[in-house]
Image (cartoon, rainbow, N blue to C red; front, top):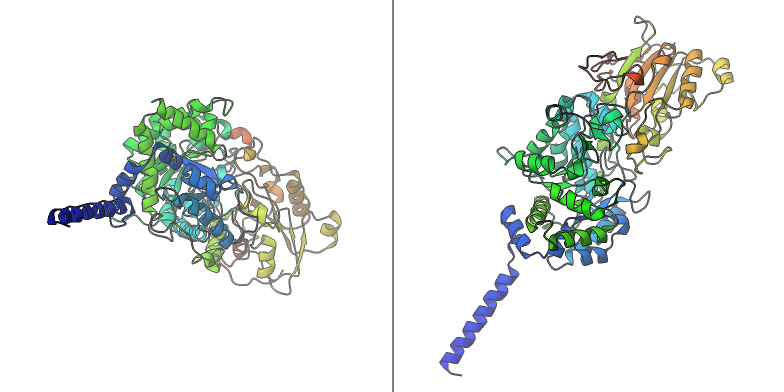
Length: 630
């Protein structure tokens, strides 16, 4: 072989080696590269099919390894109550999610999927998780630091099941308690809602000093991506009807419903979910002015915008009447990821066709995918796509249950204490000969937790691990005190037994979303009957378990003491802690308690303000030592 041939051969080998090396080195796979560089590199390699796959979120019920690979699916979710099995272990969740992830990673570019779930008061879809009080109770505490700790605990319990993304927090400002989602709102006052956005650094981690505004921030594998929702005005609909129309001018929207979004973006929230509701007749899922013009451009939000479940379908009336138009309107408005969640091939086909016909420009698709990839890189999914078992012990941990118990104590509002101010009933004596515990919610974890617990709409019964209020009472009283429990005590019992006092625990059944819309706001008749029968016969404290203020004025005179416990979650011991004086009542109403529903909507500052209990009201007690028997 002559020298020229040798040189040519060496040159070709070097050229091939260089080409192979360059092919193997992909900037997006290099964790040392800046996120923007990685996003740009990966985006440049993607086909339209791969990009649209990233914009598609499907439910776990119709997902599989094969579907993830075939359609390049970017995200999977558990819709409300969508679980592997009702009592699935953390390991079962992890194994399921990892199987979907294996499908995503087996694609040409190996882009990991992001799994999301409604962990809105703890990892509430999951059996044995710690269920914290719903937001309506947390608003009562006026304690952002507590809410931040709850966010951190929720992040750990969510990661314990292999999930890196939660659709929380709801930062709605509920202006009418007839709304079925009012319990997801911290307050009627936007200032309290703004303060409670401190849950975001709990979920995601504290944004470093001088961090660029609008960029998502997630501090490692013990944290999750959060989601501020529902953008915007969902708590202000006419008559509190879910998914209805919020009629308010721009200044009103800015001053009441928008402020918490500004705080959320400053705190690095990763995603924003769009509301089903409309603003002055325009569906939010089609509102380009607010989603693209205001949220993305003016507020400089750089995370991704996600639809609500089948949210784009509802752009038309009836829903899904013209799906191609809905896809066009939703994507052009600025929604980046579509929660389909089941008929995903229709979405993929329609969006592909709209892009190929130049109805939707490629620049809009690239904006969406760029944002989705940014969150995935910030979340560390490219370095650590697979979940492991290292955090399974965090699910329902004793530390988290103690935190939830603390939150329950601080969320209770004492509305009445004694028919005579000089003779308070609370705190109750622990030592008594015999006491009665009654009511539909006294020994019922599901009723105690409310909606969004195991199932989407919640369930009555002891559906997960926790402590009922009845059990908590038994744990707290003196061992010699006899505790008698009857859900609906018969008249003979009330008359023939000498009870020192009674604890009546009644309230609303579990509900969610539109199923909770209620124009009457009365508790079930059985609860009213229990209050009337028991409180006419025995000195009683009534504990109301509800997602909002309810009609109570007609029965108030019969009641010796009244406590609003909201939806306290699994740790009922927190209720007994305060009833018996281990801790004092400190909660102050974050919602106005109306006299009659005819007054609604009525919020603090309104000209016609005439409440039963005003915003900020709450009697206090001091912790006490064991009181003498009576």
